[in-house]
Image (tube, rainbow, N blue to C red; front, side):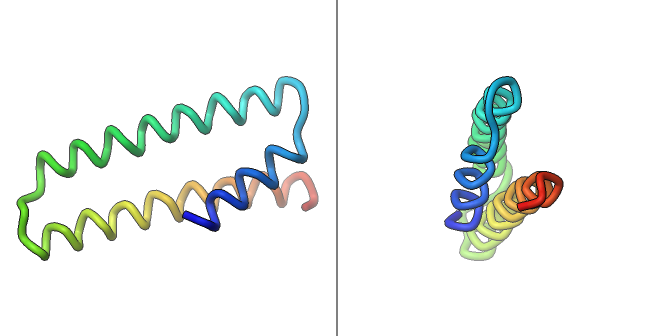
Length: 79
């Protein structure tokens, strides 16, 4: 979560105009996706400790995937 936040803020600071607006819009859409996916998983998985761990692992992977994508955008900008 900290890595994602850092990548987002760094990328946001390096963009302007349409690119900045697109990142903000994309970030809002991703947050919505993340919340809706978490709600879906809460409805699908049970309430056992193993299910809790699976949901946590899925969340960590989603956060990591998004941070990786933002890191790639930063690399493309030479940062």
